[in-house]
Image (cartoon, rainbow, N blue to C red):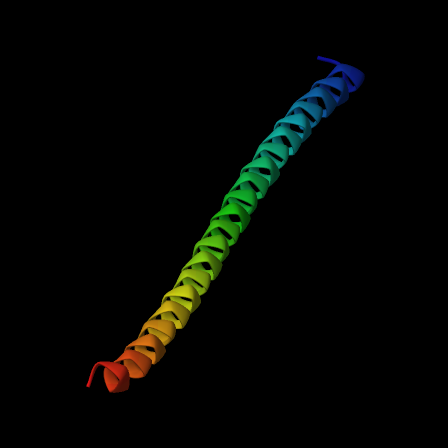
Length: 79
């Protein structure tokens, strides 16, 4: 082999490795982005559930307070 063909072969090998590395890096970035998006979605879903539970708890507390107030008002009248 001549010197130029050896260099050419080395260069082609290096370019193939570089391309393969770039492809792996791109895939890894894509995987990390998918994982990040999944985590963001999970957090948003948990936040929505927590807020819904807090609203339901507040409604239940308000209804409970209203029932207690109504019960107190009825007790003296019935006695």
